[in-house]
Image 1 (cartoon, rainbow, N blue to C red):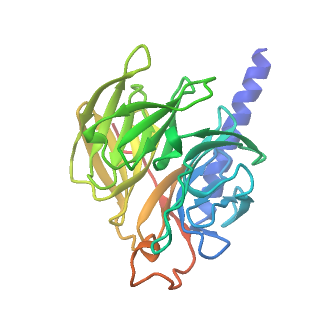
Image 2: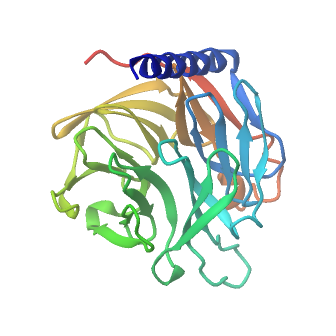
Length: 317
């Protein structure tokens, strides 16, 4: 048994080392198609990077070491609509996906069809769909707690929904004015749920009570204001990586009621909306959503969509 455990540790270390090496080889990852408007990314320890498309509903995947993300999961699989958040849950071998119906200006309002969907993380095979209450709202991003509980942000009304292990339905877990425009979400070692507000700039901590219900909801004091904070990923016991739509990728270190924000790179031009860590490299996705929302830019070619590599060395704590 000891030999087996030792072999497993060696294998895991080899995978981690491979992920670091593969990340170092890529300065960018480009999505193969045109007009995808990817809004979220996630990654696995072997170096694969996964993108969701808000315009086409396709999920793209760049294999470990590859600088090109190819179509992987088609909308027909699981009835995907417009894809926002994607999250690789390696412990459960599951890819979690936020699927919504995005209204198109000038066209009749489509019926809502908001759901959290799950796929096999290795094969991309559809597993199950969990509808938001009344199919309404905006499922934006996902995080997974240590006990396997799934949390998803709902942006339109500022909520966090929960899917308990083994449950068949999502439930509203937290709702509060501090959660207005809830977007990015992460879980840290203290077990609390951290949520940002893309329009408010808030960074909020939600305590989790012993019975699993939502406890105190508190706005943290950040070392500088956040501007359009978006996708977040936990990368350490009290550390989060964060994309700011203003053009920055950040490290955020939480200490009590305060959060120290360190800009890793601050010159992005095309609306960073998501980050993911592969080895010691942060991949930062620019969504170019102004080409969807700005009347002056609609219909114009946004150019290729890419995630850009930014070297990352964690702050000493």
